Length: 354
Image (cartoon, rainbow, N blue to C red):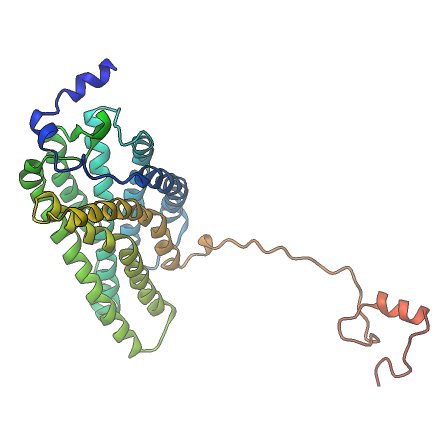
């Protein structure tokens, strides 16, 4: 208990007094929802992404250098699932954080890094497919070093945005039922000043612009492929963008729509009580569902790979122990059955080969 007191003393009176209506906003289903979904994502995501990292790095034969984006996407997903046990405990404990302020900052930022790095790598893969299909001669001039530079820039940008957030002060607050909330339940002043730049940048540069690029790339690639002879590589280019569109539509689009409404609610642009309650509940659902992206991303690695290492055959082949002869009355009827008929005098004079 004393350990908790030492780090929760950083919660200001302003935060406790002015917390932006989190106390009145309740969604009791969230505790079970987060626990179940995060547990499923942790098990599946850990297995899938560790296996993906191994296969992409060591086993799979790559037909393009875009596998560098996929390896980094799998790495980001692996980091994401590593923080889920802390989130599971947090929600299982009725949104009460017990691991300290620094752990709250690190796990919270890693959670959101995954969301926006995933979208960034999706965008890079779509642009890569766009250049490969519409500008093949320019595409062959792109070297591995160019992909490494893009990946490095994305990681540097992600870290440069999150490090100030981690070092900028406590991210835990007093929650309902005398609990300690982590990365939520901020005061209105925090939403208006400290958190506002992050939310605006995340919405515009983290989702709107990348998702627009993905939406533009897909019809251009599809139109170009419809004009040329279909090949396996061309079909994979369309499938790649299609899978990315599906993942974005299922995971990221609902999350960011509710995130925008949630942000407007927190800065008190939206004040209708019933609407704010609905927004809060939608926010909890989409916040849980967005985590499924790290389970769906391995589908992208599978369908864009040319290696048979991804394909596992579980077919069991059995050899028949029944012997067939050309004298069997019916095609496929065994000699054993035929001999039984002969023994009981059921042979038809016309049986056999005419």
